[in-house]
Image 1 (tube, one colour):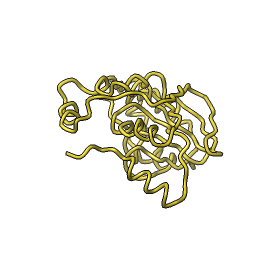
Image 2: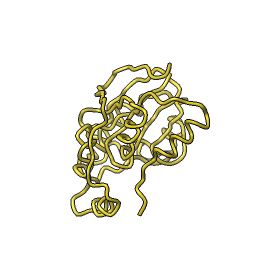
Image 3: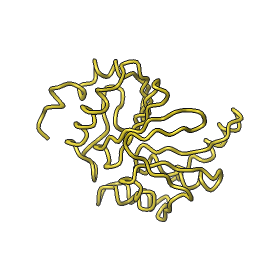
Image 4: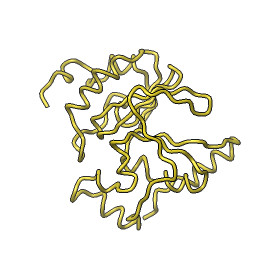
Length: 197
């Protein structure tokens, strides 16, 4: 089984477009979003941004995996049993505004998928939603440390308050807009948000 290290693919794209990476921003600590962070840091020396509640999973991604689930044997089969933090980790807090490569990003803490799930509003034009919001769906809350109640609160208090014109760039799947999701996504409707957990 091939190790899902994305450094080669990322480096190829950077070289093709003559780009230089300067930071890694993480929406949450799940291993499918963090696997290549340390190797990228070793190659480029990047600052890595993550919420403190998910920071422990940079060194221990198994700590956020469901015990007895399929992920641990897969990691072992890939030989991916040892992880460590990248060299420079910067912690994110709700409401923080950061500037990266000339772009202004507003940080919003949106727990539910993980305790430290975070979304980023970029230049009031884009929402990097990670695994909080997808086209016609939301991130799972049934995984270890997920919380349906926290997700509903994040959707109600953060996502529904965003501008309809924001273009949503999710962690998986196609881009969408807040307006489209407000209208079509069953998880943004009051019937779901007020339902019992």
